[in-house]
Length: 336
Image (cartoon, rainbow, N blue to C red; front, side, top):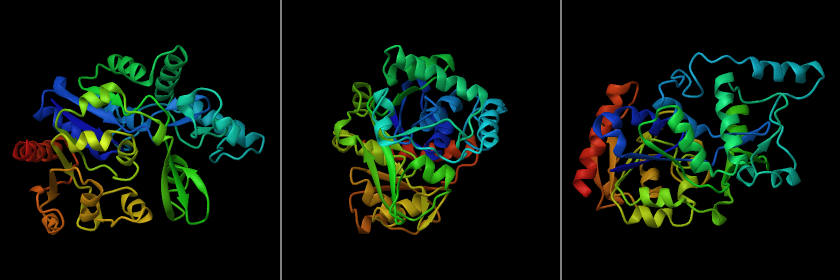
């Protein structure tokens, strides 16, 4: 058995190869839910759904978001209606009272659907409606995700990190506090980050299924250490669980160059060095790292006991993903 911590696109890309290396029936994936939003009353779980759609063979692999060849009639009509009456089509974050009203799982991440700032396809929306309806019927998020996994014939065991609300909020140097999706989707990574908060994490709990999965060897793929993996690490007990099991991490950097996304800006914003060395500092529980052949970082300068495997860590297709997964397998073998 092996467990992957997944967020963003880095680890989901790695999973394309991981299921060639490990039996999918013996793979668990713990997915970040810190960047979930409730949009127009429907719970959208981006990092969960990337794994769900990829495993189900329907993911839009150009964007790594949503379902391939989906239509967007509902989204377009929502924006047309807003334009027709002069309503702002940007993010419409609900007021403080509304943020803690309604279903608890959506706390601190509740947006109006007027003008819909995230493009959601019609088939994609059906997944959000189904998930939210299952929650309203009394199922936990874990149970709802497992039901959807069955609907998409998912081979791996997909687990949301918690059934409790945790919201990733960005504190900006402009003095604002905005949800991660507003920061990244609507504002394209601006303004500059002053800090990152995982609201609700202190009172949330990893599920029993997650804690059980973390007793197996763990792979952290090349996901953003702050907003993809950080919400999981903020949950009570997770770092302790990772310290007690073999962990290998794949750096999303080559030295000081990040492959994609806002990881460098976010790491700098929370006071960490935006580099492979900074990632190693963020994962003190890791036993091994997989680094790119071109990465000149000597992690053992700071972490003498770390095992390091090297390969070409760029992942553009399934063969690349298998190559990096084989390096993870070797690393786990060296530290288990």
